[in-house]
Image (cartoon, rainbow, N blue to C red):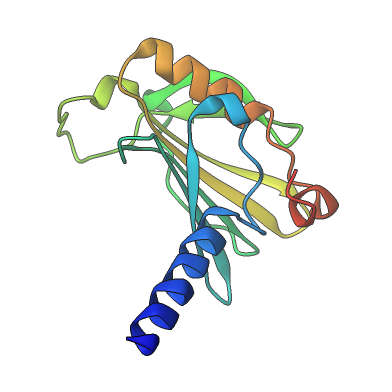
Length: 150
């Protein structure tokens, strides 16, 4: 019994720790999104999900160029991320266009010396797409802000 209580407390602490990210940039409190973070030796993957568990944003931070081919015919909106200009692209799915394809976006940004961000958006509609693009535009990725959870 005592071991089961200790195990439950440890699992609860791990769940709280997983919700409070030390590497992913903070999300606005009113966004309704929560990060799930996966840190590896050479990259950090931050996935933002809605309250019902639907993933709407994926952010990979790495020191290596992801070398993701972004096709000019799939270029969509202009934007910003970490102070750098970018273009959003529809993902190249080999000609397939599954439901929701119109509001999916992807981009890669070099935002500092040897620092890259690969961002994917999985919006449910055009309004949510605009909101997610605005959200990513406002993210602060300076090392001090990320370390402080801002």
